[in-house]
Image 1 (tube, rainbow, N blue to C red):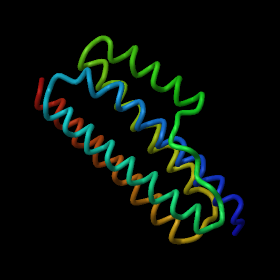
Image 2 (spheres, helix red, strand yellow):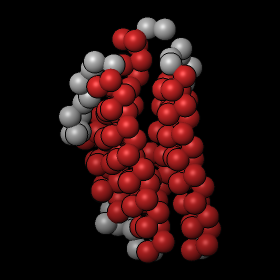
Image 3 (cartoon, rainbow, N blue to C red):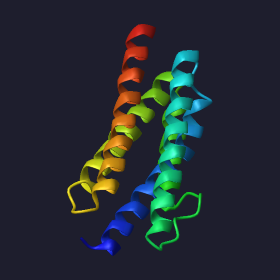
Amino acid sequence: MDPAHTIRQLESLTQFEIDVIKAYDQAIVHLEEPALREELYRSKADSERHVLEMSEVMRALGAEPPAFARNLKGYLMACITAMRSANGSDGAVRAIQAIGAATRERYAQAMEWEMPMEVRAMFQANEADVRRHLDVLAGEIAHAH
């Protein structure tokens, strides 16, 4: 196992989750249904926890985690989310679903590489959190319509 590769995977996923958190902030204000807003707050809290946990592992491996700020991709994600959300709750929900699908894909790609068992377990748990939130969100959408 290559520790440098594990660190790169952690850096990439940590930055992505930071960008997701910032994009969620754009969507939350446009959600009209309280249940959807609450689910997005829970999803955001899980993403914040993911960032903290991955940052801890990076420090344990001797690397400094990314700053809690968007990068260029994060600005683009937030802009797209804001544009979709400008159409109201439905646009915000579509943006959230796209972000969730992209997050799951990022975790799936990361888990294709060899890494310490503990890091793989953390990635699997994080991906399961995202999947759970998407499932709850889909249920809330079906209930609202």
